[in-house]
Length: 214
Image 1 (cartoon, helix red, strand yellow):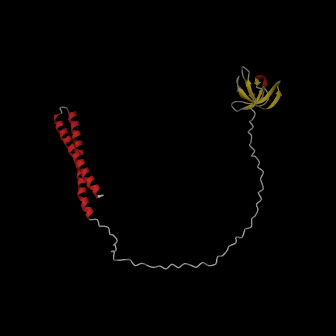
Image 2 (cartoon, rainbow, N blue to C red):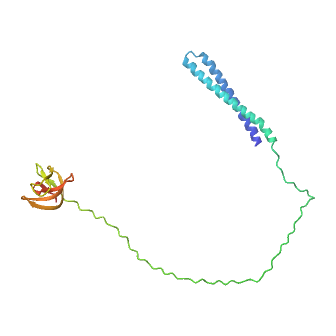
Image 3 (tube, one colour):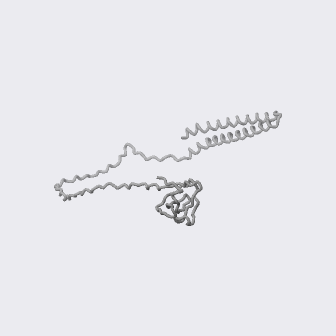
């Protein structure tokens, strides 16, 4: 690790210092160029370039000094590290005492025979269940209501009762679509049917002024 640091740190420090010198030379060149510019815009551009190069040169020089300082400090850090302690080795004349362990071998005893006892088995009778297919409800569409249309050119009154003298509920113009409801009556020489208008009003209208759709 110290060998790697000893190679990389000086190399990075030298590169940073060279970059700092390069940007310093560019800044000085931009400074001399700003004095030669005749227009204010050219002087401002040269001054901004000079300030930017001065900043880059300062940063590169600072980084290079840091790398060199770390390289100078790293050998002293390596010297202060304690050496690893190793286990002492025995000389050829010294021998470790051998611990004799007596291994007792057990004598074989009588062997016991184990006779397996069968467990009682219970018979399980599975009763098949009759599978009944689910009943799928069928949606029976409701029949379309019977309709009628007003055919009188001048229109017709919707009456509250099947009579020409009953109070009128609504004036129905020609072409008005009606829904025929259950109910039929005869009065005042007319046949009346019970209907519902598009406005939601319900009442009686004479069949002579309307046409019932089949």
